[in-house]
Amino acid sequence: MKNTIMGLLLLALSLIGLVGAAPSYYEVGDSDGWTTTVGADYYKSWSSSKTFCVGDSLIFQYNKTLHNVMEVSSQDFESCNPNFPLNTYQSQYEPVVLNRTGHFYFICGVPGHCESGQKLDVLVMSADTPINQPNNASSSCSKPNPPPQPTEDPLQVLPVDDETIATLPYNAASSPCVWTGLSMLSFVLLITLVSV
Ligand SMILES: *[C@@H]1O[C@H](CO)[C@@H](O)[C@H](O)[C@H]1NC(C)=O
Ligand SMILES: *[C@@H]1O[C@H](CO)[C@@H](O)[C@H](O)[C@H]1NC(C)=O
Ligand SMILES: *[C@@H]1O[C@H](CO)[C@@H](O)[C@H](O)[C@H]1NC(C)=O
Image (tube, rainbow, N blue to C red; front, side):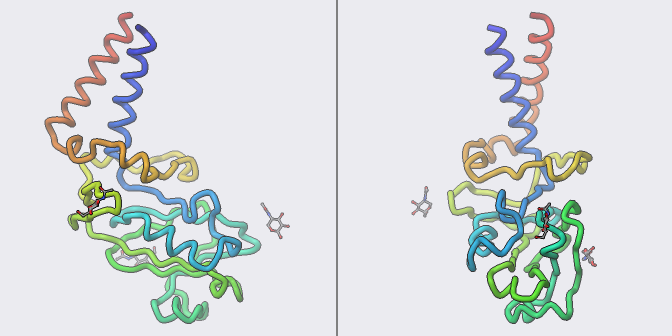
């Protein structure tokens, strides 16, 4: 009985945590990180499988002695030209905040790396654009109850993968009634747990 209560409590808490998880952090390339060894179209398919919203952050993970991150114009992205970066990032622990809508273009400025596929084009949606995701999970960038910025090491904040998102009752949980219900539920469960 206690295990069941504990399980329900964890489920309720994690639902609240995931649904309200805004802004999102995305580890570029997932566990492969930011590198040249993943193939020419790897980052293209990585970014096309995600929905990026204003305020979300990218976290580039790479070996600093081998790679860097430059935000460049679309022209310099196409031609792999590292000579006119709009922004250069060298600390892989610093999230790159997607602070506007539209395309962000990133390349590695080390000669040959962009050409071999170390380039990333991210399209950022505005906070109120409805988006139809590939899995038909109707979604939008409007995020209910955004919590404060996480204070822990951003590298520890794992991105929420599509499978997890698909299992979430996202629309239902977005409504204030369900939201309040979930909060009440976890509160009641907490009280129950404490008194068992
Ligand atoms: C980074 O790359 C350099 C050069 O290949 C290597 O000596 C070093 O061990 C690497 N560092 C890490 C943390 O992998
Ligand atoms: C977004 O952040 C970058 C890097 O800090 C900065 O250069 C740029 O001006 C910011 N853009 C907006 C619209 O705030
Ligand atoms: C998503 O929607 C399209 C068009 O409405 C439909 O053809 C497709 O089967 C749906 N895919 C899933 C996974 O439900």
